[in-house]
Length: 538
Picture 1 (cartoon, rainbow, N blue to C red):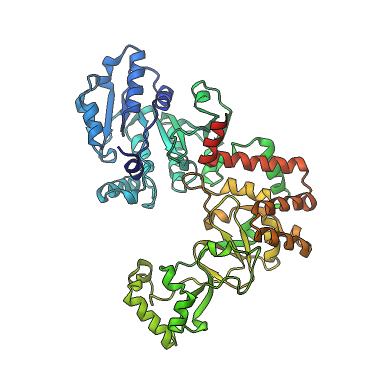
Picture 2: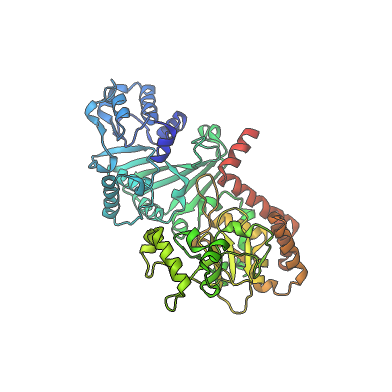
């Protein structure tokens, strides 16, 4: 299957060495029944054959092995294999197969959103999730119902072993899976390897092994390896025990446990002293407005002049984060961004604006999906003026103070101060330092390839220095921040904030360096490109 088609279908074939390793983790003999529910190019099949061959028991495979696959070319390859019973090589969507008893289910499920599946397959997967009493939006991935369904095949004391995307450790709907696994397996292990198991794909993966079906546990064994060589030689860099409850609480323990305890202790010490607090105690983030058509609803100066749109029906707006990159520092002042949002209101719409509305209908803007959901179609909903803006992408986000009373589109997060005794400057000073960067790494999820993306729920949990500690900073500090940001020196701004940590919080140079090293370590694990660079430099 071509790479582009494989990516579209969420198909990433497992290397034979990983397949052999995972097979050896769950196959202890040759008497159990084995199911490979999505065998694709056959990496796990070959690993299973190798295991049986090493035990001089390939004759047992006709009785013991079951394979399921949707791709016809894969079925043709293995249905006539001399080691297998053709009747046990099943051509089907795995979710559609009724459970039959096996002792081990092993494989690599597709990593594809349900919304990208044909209607019949998507509905089947959603129905299966509901049968387990769980819920998942169609944007969720097929691996979730796939793993649940696999467990339905297991006999008592059975085991599963899967290659899964790292998102299984933190996406919201996966909490349901962790709850299920803890209640139904005696032992659960997550294996994470710094070296990519899917080179060139940009999807970080982990190995999940769960044994002893029919029993329960409150913990996950977490094994961390530097590379595949150390994995195959069982030379773990770290081994921890993670409470399932911490995953259910959204703590992201499979990230924090990459760090040494001494690094985390600095973090925890500040929290226990009340120096560190979640930003939502002082500021609540929301996503910006959705206009439905950025060009139409943000008319250019030429269009404004052409239709002679009145100023009172145009709101100062930031349509995208790019508008803030040019010569804008900490403060977004009145007039520094010239974009306007067309916002005529519900009543007393001017004649010129009515002409522009008619123009929008003539070019079909009113037929856009979001426009069809609102009445009237030309009024952009949820217009609020925040005190703060935060960029959505990047490991060193830019924090702005909205002095120009702008509104902003969903390309930015909008911050609203919750505490009347706190001002935006104090929060900005609390934000720009390496402790915030560490909290970001611990709290914010990344897209494929490792790019951080800030969403309101996660952004609200980022911890910052209590702004009250920084209420007496002189104007010189903010001037330095303003100038550094205008020059594009975002990294220098965070380093400048570290000096405040020494003066205002009492952190020592060694503690600051420890925090920075922790940030660097988590970035290297998160960033696929950086991992590859470090691997090449070995």
